[in-house]
Image (cartoon, rainbow, N blue to C red; front, side, top):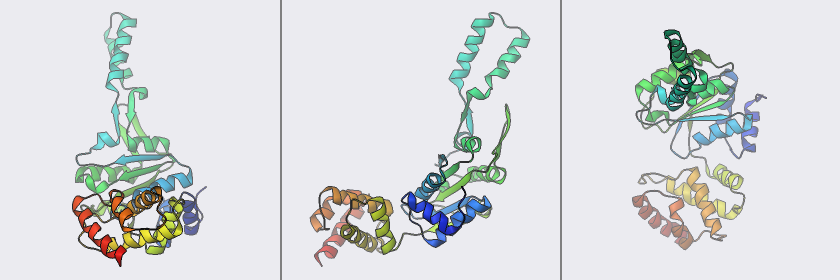
Length: 294
């Protein structure tokens, strides 16, 4: 059943462990109600991909994910033909028929492009399975041509397959696009979408997230971890400030070591869960020494 309000969206997402603020719940509700794609931008680790996963879980819909990368084209997003199976099919037909007349050759050619040989990639799969949630992850990593293709599909929710005809979604899929803003997306794509910038959560909300997603971590330890992470994010000299995912990993790692209260030795020993760059590790160790000795 479709959510009735923004607060209903927030409540449903919360059942999956995803805690969002009122603004994000509102834009998600509007995207669902207006059947518009939702474009989420923000720093890595702020919960953009997790929101799409939570929407799918809360609505009990299949999640179809298209991971974008440099050089991706329509073939990787739409469909391809299962060439090995087509060859086997031809050989089987030859074995049964023996010789082949002009008419049987034409029939064989047509049978090669039967739907059973079609390999549906994420965009086509979402249209076929809809209602579904289509996650187009890190769209900023793709190029301009792919953006134009994506815009065309999102305008009609249909694709044309020359050998089979047009495939159109009976119900438009819920589309969530994410971007880390490594480059600016074109205005045409943005106009098609509802937009929201996801920032890192505040202290209290991040503590809530840790307590919700990692209930085995004590309230005291969760708050200590989040306080440290929030101070690290405020620095401007880290190559990759820790996201919420890193906060969760770090809290769980410390908890697994049986530490009930954050201390310098345990914090330093578990830095691999928090920072992913050697240079950041040195800076964070120095910062931890100052924070935890204070």
